[in-house]
Amino acid sequence: MSGKPKLHYFNGRGRMEPIRWLLAAAGVEFEESYLEKKEDLTKIQTDGSLLFQQVPMVEIDGMKLVQTRAIANYISTKYNLYGKDVKERALIDMYVEGMFDLNELLLMYVIQPAEKKQEYFANMMDKAENRYFPVFEKVLKDHGKDFLVGNQLSRADVQLLEVILMAEEYKPDILAKFPLLQSFKGRVSNIPTIKKFLQPGSQRKPQTTEEDVARAMKIFRS
Ligand code: IBG
Image (cartoon, rainbow, N blue to C red; front, side, top):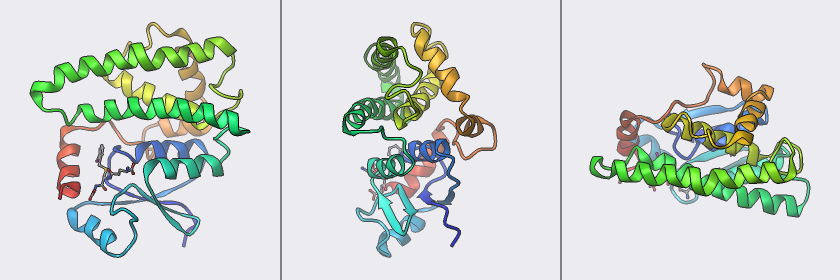
């Protein structure tokens, strides 16, 4: 066995992408096993690999971890991306849960039916600009530090950069009103492990297309 974590998911962002980001930021090499068809999922569902019959699943340190947040928590703890004490961790948890909520909104846009897309888009952008990004802009402004929590890189910074870039794919000037998030984006994007992940040819997945959705539906729809 190579010792590298092995990620089991389909070849697309979906719920695995935050895990890819965290491993990459931590400088951890990982392997991926892509589910290509329904039978690939059925196989790991029936051989007992999946606690709740669902992916993402990550083989790491002799475990088969499932549930996106549990996996992300383990990786963040193991690679020191989860604050230095229980209070920092509570802050990180609050910020990251907000980021997961925004991530979910952005993730689900592509599966909206045509007649709902416009309304969904407006709500998603309203939430990004008026609910979530102002919070993180204010956090940076209030403490004046480079990172969201504890003046050192944490999963909150990694997950914020991920969701900023996702939102910019839909609205390139979304950070126009957030100068501190703009400089944050530049700073965190330049951390060597992250810079590498942002370069072409990395294991970062491209923006989800309608074709990706069709592919995922074939695998995950029962
Ligand atoms: N709470 C779980 C987690 O966070 O890991 C949910 C996992 C989940 O929804 N898994 C889906 C699955 O395995 C695949 S991701 N379904 C098979 C089944 O039998 O339930 C589906 C998904 C995509 C994109 I793709 C956006 C959101 C969900």
